[in-house]
Length: 317
Image 1 (tube, rainbow, N blue to C red):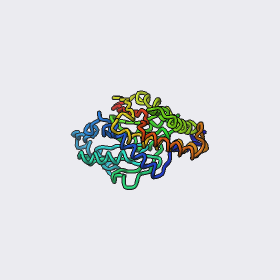
Image 2 (cartoon, rainbow, N blue to C red; image 1 turned 60 degrees about the vertical axis):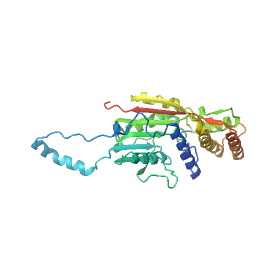
Image 3 (cartoon, one colour; image 1 turned 90 degrees about the vertical axis):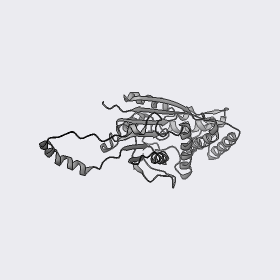
Image 4 (cartoon, helix red, strand yellow; image 1 turned 30 degrees about the vertical axis):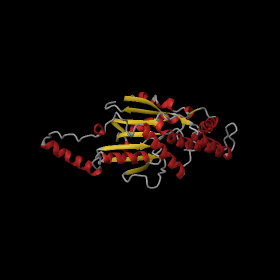
């Protein structure tokens, strides 16, 4: 199946799926020790202070008056801090970041949630989060170029065609201002593991991986992602790997939404006529889910490497 023929999103998009994404987000924030923006980036360093006006001659000021007035009428003063969440899904990342910014006294902010479509859980979206529609595989309109201090992306593996990763990365980078950051977090479905070994988990991962392959997705997408900051000549690059089961005190909360997500991908594979070994129909999928839930109760850990990439756009190209 070509990328043009493939469904845009290989997961489910109902309320249960949205709640699963929020549950998964809550655990990821624990993995990252509560940091929304990478811990090495300080909010104060992102805020651009107004430049001091240079002294001008009276004649020069008169000539520039009309042009300056037209520009001021055309656009309002930009917020001091501008952050985009691309492929924002339920909007939970920006909504919780909004609360943190308010607690720290940052009120002059613009928070934009970009996605091809939105699926927030009712009552969870912050009032100051703007929902905007865009496909990351397409260029952003020019008026958004060089606009944001930070652009954040997370979990595109089920959405994006394999060949589109470098294109989408460049498109997101276009909306980051010089000196701003792009922070992209991702995992590869094919690298999911279990401890102890679970053959049922292997089949769930296999079915989801088959679903990705037949729809032109990349189950090893992080292998490409980690190369993109350097390929785009970014500075202050950081590539970090956080194991999903690296917080023992939260293992039970970590594995459960991961299992639900894996089964969503496997279920969609079967719904579209796919099979994997003896997983042939929805009854087989439901049985797999039951076994995995029993294994969770027995202490099985299901995990994957969570990759965090960060890069700063040079001030000068």
